[in-house]
Amino acid sequence: MSQPPDQGSTSRRKFVVGAAGLVVAGASGKAIADNPKNQPPNVPEWTRTLGDGVGVRAYGTPSKFEKQVIRRTVPWLTATPESSVSFTPLHELDGIITPNGLCFERHHSGIAEIDPADYRLMIHGMVDKPLIFTLDELKRFPRANRIYFLECAANSGMEWRGAQLNGCQYTHGMVHCVQYTGVPLKTLLNEAGLKSGAKWIMAEGGDAAAMNRSIPLAKALDDCLIAYRMNGEMLRPENGYPARLVVPGWQGNMWIKWLRRLKVGDQPWFTREETSKYTDLMENGKARQFTWVMDAKSIITSPSPQAPAKSKGLTVISGLAWSGRGKVVRVDVALDGGRNWRTARIDGPVYDKACVRFYYEFDWSGEALLLQSRAIDETGYVQPNKDDLRKIRGVNSIYHNNGIQTWHLKPDGEVENVEVG
Image 1 (cartoon, helix red, strand yellow):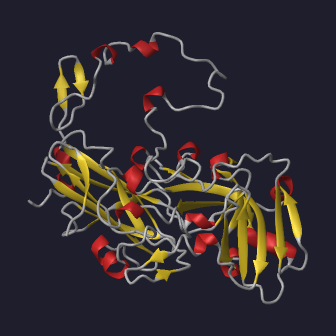
Image 2: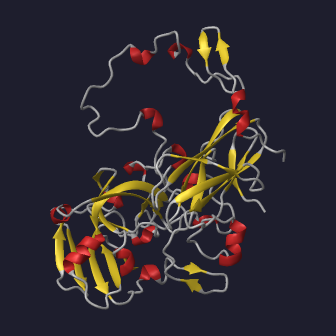
Image 3: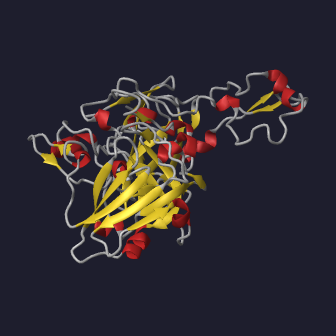
């Protein structure tokens, strides 16, 4: 494969002057416009008629031309819709914040519909005084606003044995990044008072599965939140309304939704979700347990299988990176399957345990490319390639796959999920 052109050649972008005026075109010379009647110097049709008035779109909905931007499912991936997952359309988004209506879903017994007037959060166990809080009482505590990513441990899990799902929505779409508003868990635990010897909490949800997980007390007292808002508005039902646990940087299964109780104890509870599930089956048949942290990971969202390159010339590689161990400090991209790495440009805010947006611009002349990205976090951890990860982990697990993803950009602009040796 020939060496791809570098960033320095972006000044060769072409502009074509049409008979009716200036029309911006790609390097192929094909005009972007589809309907000449709506192009300058003509007055477009939408300027000739009145639009909808105030209040017609009470909540606000996307443009009808963006109706393809939705969460999607893979029907054969799980047994029933009540115990299933929908995927965030990463290829349709930019920046670092995921809109509430596009955040991926993972349910174990369907969405619990909880009347906030009936909601209660109980704290008991090894505490000085057991407490029960209403939602209004939670809102009276000092609030914190934090931006964090949430990633399901099974994100990219279908890729352990090779390239499977053709699209970053499906390979990496079990992740989102939002601003949470709530009360630090430490505040509530201090209200209850912790007994000597307390080391763990068990968080339980109010859904039909009564989802529960053991969490070290040290983590609970560090940066966990009881959140009731995301991106300013109250949680969506599918994301735990009216309150959920936020466990920054750790696997999403521990972020208990519809949170109903927290029990303090001196040892883990070894629940179903941390024994028979959410453990990493190794090649020798043994399983790793309590692998909570989501290691540094990245994905090129465009070009990608659902977002092919539309024309040659100036091309923007865009993607997301995140790490459960802290801030992402650098993202590299490769156009040749990892032989040569170039530093991407991180644009926008960089927060602890949150997604970052990266870009790399170059002139694409139409040759086949193998696009990759790798994240490096502030601990020095470098995202591994899949072969190196498999040497340690084998291929039996479905959890914690943070291997480097490869997209094959073809000369016609189409993109395919592949692996390189």
